[in-house]
Amino acid sequence: MKDLSPFFAPKSVLIIGASRNEFTFNWQIVKNLRELMYKGEIYVINPNADDILGIKCYSSLEELPTIPNLAIILLMKNITETVEELAKYGVKHCIIQADLSISDNYEDFIQELQRISDEYKILIIGPGSIGLINTSNFFTSSIIPVRRHIIQNHRKNRTNGSLSFYAQSGGLSGALGWWNPIQEFPISKVIHIGESINVTAAEVIQYLFDDIETQVISLYLRTLTPEVVNVIQSNDSRKPVLFKYVGENSALLENLQRTLAIEVNNYIELFEFAKVFLWCPPPKGNTVGIIGPSSGAIHLVVSEMHHTGIDLANLNSQTRKIILDKVGGSTSLRGNPVDYWPPKKFIGTDVCNVYYISSNALLEDSKVDALFLALEFFSEIEFDFSIFSTIQKRFPHKPIIAVLIMAEKEGRERIITCATQLHIPVFVDEVERAIRAYAAFIGYHLKK
Image (cartoon, rainbow, N blue to C red; front, side, top):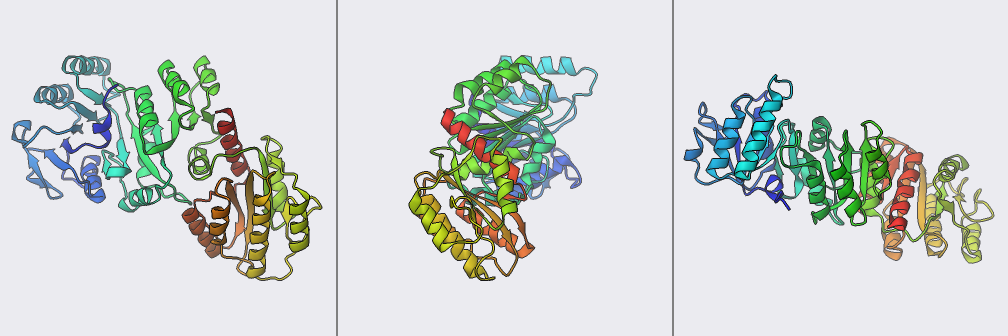
């Protein structure tokens, strides 16, 4: 196994080609390390500057006080000579973040890098890498802006593990340094390697399977190799893998589809589905209870369930009696789904009581494996969502998922904030996506 850890958590990093021009990518990488307050040593080689953002600049490798763990090359020329010089100096890990794919002698350039890597046993990511982000130690080699408060949120929310994202797209991977989703969830590693010299996509994915901080792996793939399919097939029962493939159909794709890896319909589901896998306890079965404010909202949930193999739970008589007696409204005689409209009083406390009674009753029923909350809120009937804190403690082994179909802005923000603190996935205006996410969740755990 190749040791990839210095790419993610170097004790010291050398940047060759950093710029004093704040409008360049070559300046941004130093800014990012400063922004994140990276704790390791930072060395910069730039013979034309005394310092960049307060970091001392050196003229050559020989001036450095120590051999750096990782070297990042931002140069657009003399790259092979620079890599060989680094290798002779003792550097064992290098990222080339210049994109030279349009040069006339690109193939010769790649072959020369491969010769150097073989001769000196130096591991090379790139060329054409946008960089990597590791939130756990505030390190990044990204040349795209990275925000400290985003990285801090990823660390703060890390309770049951994190998502790690490998993308065969520099823009999509780099964007995770500043992207702030509607519902925050923890992200551990973000990876873009560009060209594969001697660190391959398969080896990076294997690293994520072995990474103790990574609980869920999301992949954006343009190409497939037998090695990528094999590493997923060999490890897919260890961690869930979500993937979006945008290349041509092939036998390799068919092989990947036969693993436990979950193919999503669109890009954003690489992250929206991950919330369910990160925050929900493993399901015992495919039956659910539903609570909603109207037949319209409930039918949106139920109609999508028909396509996914999720069933409405057939309640026992005691549960049914509790709901019919204490909730009423338009609830069906089966007691599930619970349609509490119209509420007895047009106030939030009354609606809160409905959700509290119904949720406890449904989750108490052994025939209910999970609970779906369909939510429509305006200020008069908004309630304190923190009631689900005590409900979660009573039923820690049953998933709770919310679908926020309609809500006034302030109420929506309060619900999302509270649900995030409780690690309850919320799908905003996305009923169908919520059901598909839970179906994928069930399918993975039951197959595993």
